[in-house]
Image (tube, rainbow, N blue to C red; front, side):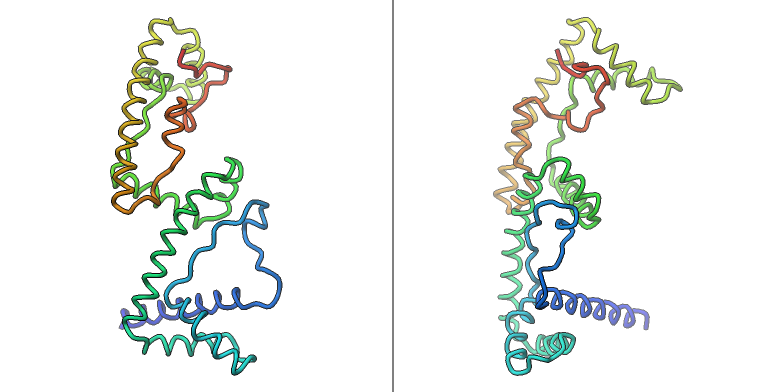
Length: 255
C-alpha cells in the first residue's frame, strides 16, 4: 500500500513539474525573470527538455493549440501524458537519445560558463542557487571517484603541516598568523627544501592530470574536465586558491 502511495506521489510531482515547464515556455508575457537576471549576471545555458517534455511541447501541444487555442495548459499536459503511454518504443528511444546528446552539450556549455564567470559572480550564483551547489558537489565527487589527481600543497602549506602539532590550545587563526611570520623569516636553505618538494610535486601533478584528462575524453567523460587546471599548475597556482594566506604581503611566496 505504501509503495503504491509513493508511486502515485512521484507521478503527481512529475505531472506538476511538467505543467510548470509548459507554463513558463508558453507564456505570452515577457521572458521569465531568471535567478541570473535578479543577481545581475550572464544567463546560464538552457537545460534541454526531457524526452516527455519534448514530446509534449513539440509534438502534442502545437496540434492541440492549433485546433483549440483556449485549451488550458493543464489539459494539454494531461492529454500529452495519456498519449505518451501509447508512444512506440522506437520513438521514445529516439527522443531519449536526443535528450542524452543534448545533455552532453549542456554539461560542456555549463563547464565553459562557470569557467568564464568571475570569482565574485561564481560565488554569488552558487550562494543563491542550491541546485548548482549540489551539482558542483556531485561533479567533485564524480571526479574523485574516477581518480582525479589531487593538487599538491604549496611550499608554505607543507611547512605549516609539519608544524601543526605545535599549535596546542592556541586559536587556529592566531596560530596561522604567527606561523606566517615564522615562514617569512625562515632560513632560505630551509625554505628551499619545501619549495623544491612543491616544484617536484607540481610537475608530477601536471603529468598525472594530462593523463587523467586524456582518459576522461576517451571514456566519454569530457564534461568532468576543468580546462583551467593545467594552466593553473603551469603558472604555479596549484593549491594556492584554497590555501590560508598569511596576513603579511608576500609571506606565502615560496622563495
